[in-house]
Every structure is written in C-alpha cells, then in structure tokens.
View 1 (cartoon, rainbow, N blue to C red):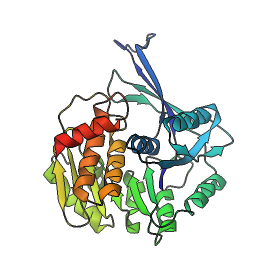
View 2 (spheres, rainbow, N blue to C red; view 1 turned 60 degrees about the vertical axis):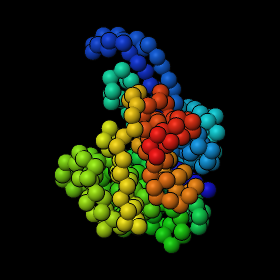
View 3 (tube, rainbow, N blue to C red; view 1 turned 90 degrees about the vertical axis):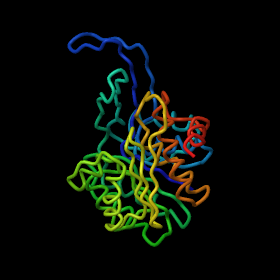
Amino acid sequence: MIYTVTFNPSLDYIVSVDDFRLGLTNRTSSELLLPGGKGINVSTILKNLGIDSTALGFVAGFTGDEIVRRVEEIGVHSDFIRIDEGISRINVKLKSIDGTEINGMGPSISREKTQELMNKLNALAAGDVLVLAGSIPATMPDDIYSRILEQLKDRDVTCIVDATGDLLKKVLPYHPFLIKPNNHELGDLFGVELNKREEVVPYGRKLQDMGARNVLISMAGEGAVLVAEDGSIYDTPAPRGTLVNAVGSGDSMVAGFTAGWLEKKDYRHAFYMGVSAGSASAFSEYLATKEEIMDLYRQII
C-alpha cells in the first residue's frame, strides 16, 4: 500500500479576480474549492492514474471535516487524525496574479497526536511506500521526518521525501529512496544559483553522497533532471504547453515518478512519467487526468 502524509492539509480557495486593486472591494470571476496539501495532491494524481493510496495527516474543525469529505469524494482512502481544538487551514490562492496566495496556520498538534501518527506509521511493512511531503506546523518537532524514517529503517519501506531545508537534510542519513528538490531549493542547500540542467547534476550527486538514493530535480520551464542510484543521469526539457496553474505540479511529478517506478522498476520510465504528470498538471486548471498525463508521456518519449 502507498501512504501519503500531509501534516497541515488545507481547503484551497482558488479565485480569479479581474483587474485586482489593493484597498478596494474586489469580486471574483471564478472560484474553486479543493482539498489541498502536498501529500493529498500526490494521492489525487495516483488515484487519477488508477493507483490506490491512503492519505494520512491531521485535520480539525469544520474545515477538517470538509477536507476529509472532499478527499474521499475523489476516491482516496483517508485515515486522518482528528485534532480537538482549532480548525484546519484555509489557503486563498489568487489565480489572476501568479504565485499570490495567503496560507493559513492550521491547528496546534500535541505530542500525543504526533505519537498517534507515529503509531500508525509503525504498522508499515516491507513493500509499502511512504510519501512525506510539504512543510510541518510550527508546533511539531522539526525532526519529525527523520524520526519517521528512523522508525522505519530496515523495514524495506520505500520512503519518498519532498521537503526543503533542514527537514530534507535531516532525512538524508536514513537513505530515502527518492527526494525531489527544485533547482532553487537545491541551490539554497549549497549556497549557489542553479538555472541550467547540467548545473544541477553535481549537486544532486552531493545529496547522494549525503545519503539520498535518487534525486529528482524539477526546474519549471527548464525541464527536469534525475540523478539515479545506478549512476545514470536522465534529463529532459519541459514539454510544450501553456502554463495554466503551477500549484501541485511538483507533487504531481512525485506521484508520476512513483507510479512509473512501481509499474516497471525502470528509472527512465519513472522519470518520464514524473515529468509528464508534473507538466500535465501545470497545463491544467487542476491536477492532471490520466489521459492528459499519458498524452504528454507519448510526446516526451
């Protein structure tokens, strides 16, 4: 079974506002309300590709109830832990001004609730896949990702991590199967600026030296690079298409790679599936369908 963890899920209120003006009343021209969070996005794309997964994490209040309802409406099994106080966050994303959003805080997660999640994850066994994705609430310990991987070491669980900064660095000694920084996050780790595909390869190898098995680097319009465990390097420019909504494209890449790897255990196929899923979501109003992903896959190969 595949398990995804979203520590701070949200309801994403995605709106378009024509001629947005500060200090004045603005009215929406389109609205969309979706369950949000990187792990949930991964589960959604997997479901679109016909692969079941279980979404884990924390939810609270009426917004938490709606997150669960909408996740299960998509067809994704959920096993969220409910928090008694507070509400799950609402994120406002302004489509008409790319990259403009206001993200809520989310509920406080107690030590007892954190341990409840650890207990759920302790049931994972050989052959399971675990995807840890995104940031964590400020109330959680900043070593939670590494604690999870330490708990699962020697279990033959395939661990995939999509995180940044210290969250990412602290998991590397536990040899995650896959990590997925983008070129800016990779550059921040080493204090350099990386803009070209050939520039990221040495730094992907540095992350392997630090413990990562496979490093998948997304680079938006520049394409993507995979520094694979077997020594192979795969890279491709971005497929042709019109950027519609970049939200969730990185999560879609993780899901596509995961689906491709589980299908054939072939790095080239997994890489192209990842790029296809990430790009297809970027070219779509929401997360990509299987048909959209496979159309791009055929174009890339």
